[in-house]
Image 1: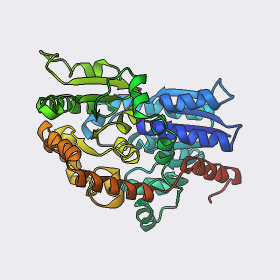
Image 2 (image 1 turned 45 degrees about the horizontal axis):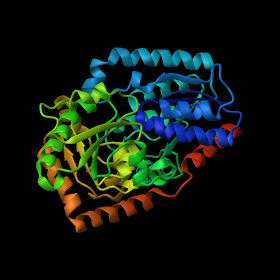
Image 3 (image 1 turned 90 degrees about the vertical axis):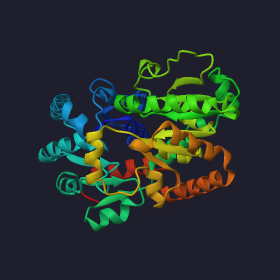
Length: 398
């Protein structure tokens, strides 16, 4: 069968890669054409016997857009990609279009594909439970089957009368198969030529806009923590997003007196290993905060966006927390610092609390265990792939 997958950002690339593995296992004759990033492309290169028209169409780094204002100013590029995608789908004629999160783009494609008789699956449900509940109408109209990944979504979508399939969360598979869980700390440090000293992981996000807002805060936090004598020997590792380059980070790391400043280093493509071996992590809100939970590293989440985007979001976002881990257990397992609260001093105080307060750290890790338990066990990605293929082979609506 022919599968057309659209993963429009870093988290979708990760989940899409695991879904593709499942599809190839369940359907060895699968022909897959996709939008995504390095993860899905690596799976395709390793597992597909077909090239030609199969493979990567566009890399997500060419189109990832976040926030209301960002969507507005980049509308021309977004619409150009939508038009290109529609033409590409019609030219290739897939059996199914599989949409992964990225609702601003994917809802347009869902309507287009559905109106032309192409089956549409939506994997990683758009967060209509948080905002833009009006999109439920489009989900019912244009999507043949919704595949959800969070336990708190089950009662929500039931109450809205939307048919869905839940097989657990694919991030459990991604973490459990990661080198971060099999490689010890010493091996990680040696492999990267790093000194054997404690460090703080810093995750500024995957999009250029996120990095631009978070990096100045993280750099100043590192300077302030470094000035405290008991932390002067700490290192700071920036887990750089794979689709970015060094210039996205180095701009914020210049120092007039580098010999006296903190030891800040940038590593690409090793987020999970960096987080796993850190004393604590400062994480930009998103999938990375849930990865940090599953890796077992105490964290503080920070989130900063444009003032206009934030003002709009405050009016329409309905959830109590911005982090998935906190949403899953419906309480603060770890602190969230949002907008003005996300400043160097608040981050410093929280990181110190994580490291110095043993009871606080123990409670956070206990909450982590509950979050993991609620996400379910291994095998979610392959189970979802199997369910998708069963529906397609039966030609109906299970």
